[in-house]
Length: 143
Image (cartoon, rainbow, N blue to C red; front, top):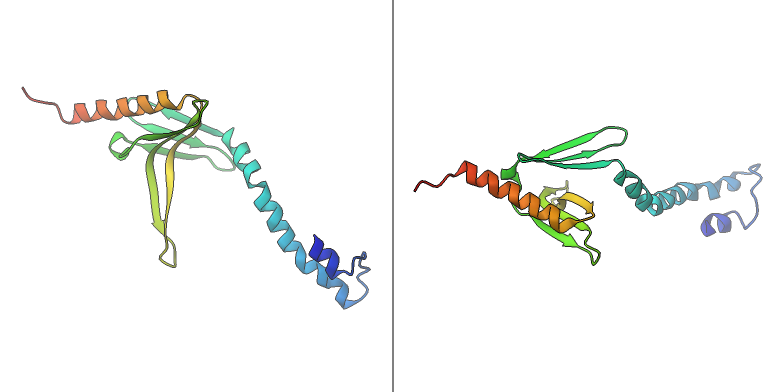
């Protein structure tokens, strides 16, 4: 905003001369800055549109918005289950990672799981129990 004000000579432009349009080149940067600063608010808003479901056969995430995104994870896809816990017992249960390379070949990854859970330790135990139960059914021991 300071740059826009300085480019206009700290006066309100009258737009009757060509140079009065110059400060308008700063408007896209101002809008991008507002969008970046509001990203946490959008994430907070989207958290109210997210539902996690854990059954005895899969872990499912429903993320609402303009379009519903549904992701289902079978027990064999839950390769590593771990939690990130805060002091109050809330946190994230991570059970998968999404990895990709961009057009320049740079590797990126995103942790996938149930995020912002109130009793994260209990959910982690339930996920591990579901995965263990599936493995026992898939590989029964013969005695």
